[in-house]
Image (cartoon, rainbow, N blue to C red; front, side, top):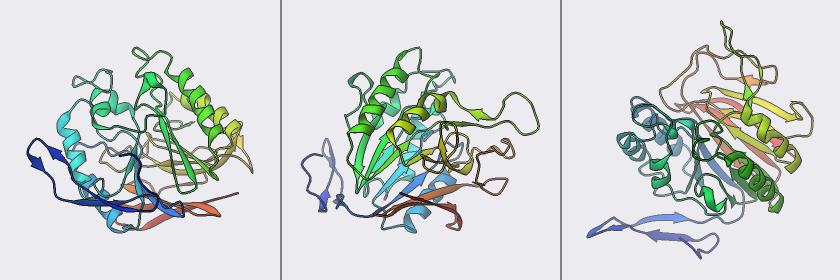
Length: 316
């Protein structure tokens, strides 16, 4: 849809052959304060729990302007049954408010669990065409209110067979995209987490920063990003401000969003030295709400039944 007017209510319906939907409505951005519901990884064996969480979060936040899904929407990216289960769960939500989605590593699995191009993800979503022309729907940006959202594809290893220069092209685009915006707030959305967590109770990985973090965090520093939201590890943690890979007073603020599906990793991760808060263990499903105002970005984490867990406030 193009040429829509600011702060305006619209009605629409869809047609497939001779089948026509009922009328549905939505409202465009009015440029002011707004609220967004954020869903962490929803990949599941049974999407019933995800469906309940998605619906509950929306029912408790009917004034939300848009939703954000943080990648790994489904467990197997080439399984159309799972995509249909995910879509059914979003009925009454995604037909009423716009959504920002991003690719997770599970979108890149074939039916025999090998790496594959994310054909079904790319077929189901048509996203703002303002990224690299060779990587359509892999990364993009958009504005809502006084917030500029930059959405990344973090599949460094999964897609290198087909897109060997993905990260170099994407880093250049991201730096240019973040430099161009005149919005007050800059928010980056990325599936894989910039931090690396050590395993609890066994060897094999040390605390530090992930390859994706090492690639992109210097870009965020140089671009004066305000907030970075990530996912992938199925744990909800507030890490506060980080600059040049260490704690800082003025720097991008990092939050990993948790888990919204039924794939959980109880007790897998040790605490990171940069963690300010992490959800009670063992973790259950959660979602987040971001409120964007003139003076602050407020991100609040909730359990699946709507109980508040933690609030992060970003000011500048």
